[in-house]
Image (cartoon, rainbow, N blue to C red; front, side, top):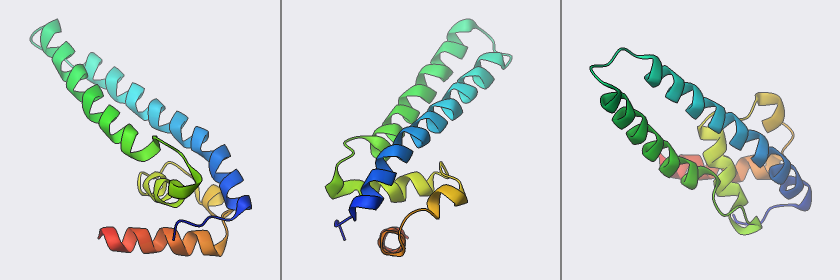
Length: 109
């Protein structure tokens, strides 16, 4: 299950950065939203933002950290589960890669 074709690996490496940017955009938008909320104090707002960033940073690590060929399919499954790639981008992967990703997702359920 950890074998990934060269073409899929190259595609994964290029889309990994795209997905990371989209994830970070979501986080920044969430921070803006929290910052704009009415709060009793700036300290309350700060704490909410801090907790949000801490939570999202942990998630970011699980989704994106250590992109190696040996774990690319697992990271791809993570990225797809977070809906960080379009259907068009996902459809570029080989049927073998998508079958492996589907297996990973089934195991997780």
